[in-house]
Length: 304
Ligand SMILES: Nc1ncnc2c1ncn2[C@@H]1O[C@H](COP(=O)(O)OP(=O)(O)O)[C@@H](O)[C@H]1O
Ligand SMILES: CC(=O)N[C@@H](CCC(=O)OP(=O)(O)O)C(=O)O
Image 1: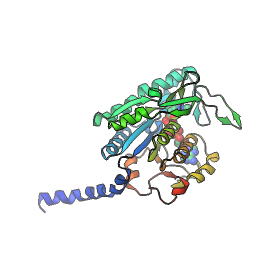
Image 2: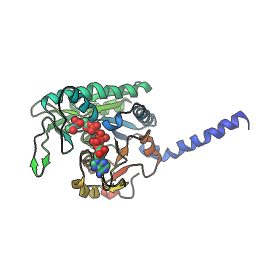
Image 3: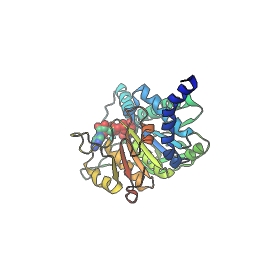
Image 4: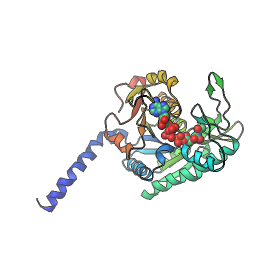
């Protein structure tokens, strides 16, 4: 074979792979995709770099990615250094006033900066903001119910309003917004800690996003966690609603968020394994996806 023929031969599988992605890319062209990057998937340097490549790929393929990031493990480590003990109730961090200063510093000053830096290695694309900026997210104090009783867990916020103006302006300018899950309250002027899954879901609904992708540190929603590793690959909003009371820890805000998103008009909400390199692109290249997909009731059998 001539050199040219060998090169063509070697490149053909790559061309096929690109063509395989074409239906997905066509369907999603111009659509907004909100991607939640979890703190647990964020501890590995290679994973973070691959995540940035995937997001930039989506942007260049004509989608409008919006990144909402977590930082649970990073916040816990920083609180530890400040001698503040981390405690969670109903899957949410009990956040004192002092802890809130640390949460804000870590999310906006450390984790967000790092992600913006990684994305911007590929061009002048990413712009970081928190929910405080341009009133993107407004919150009120959240009192989760535990055993039927409302419990005070400090400066933890529940989103009451979203102003998508700043994010939409950035998207229209071809940028990739990177949002930290912090919101200001109009009631008392304080800054509140919002769970990043909740923030991503609320933003996805408010933006009228096509898809919410939640990257985490498990394969998806396990049917009988922690006893089995059977992943539920697809479920409707109603099926998820029935399952919610049985869920525990970090999966609670994640799946509540997915439900909120699809009920709010998002076509699919997916929980995918952020420990797998290029999990976002893998999700695109497989028809049924690699994790758990939540679809609105009326769309059963239709979404992909
Ligand atoms: N049914 C379930 N399926 C999968 N994981 C579950 C389930 N119930 C609870 N979990 C726990 O939820 C965790 C994911 O939530 P979390 O730690 O908050 O992740 P992240 O940092 O990505 O937001 C998993 O690592 C697992 O320990
Ligand atoms: C109220 C609440 O729990 N806020 C979270 C915010 C960060 C987050 O959600 O990070 P992950 O996505 O990495 O879990 C926290 O303080 O850990």
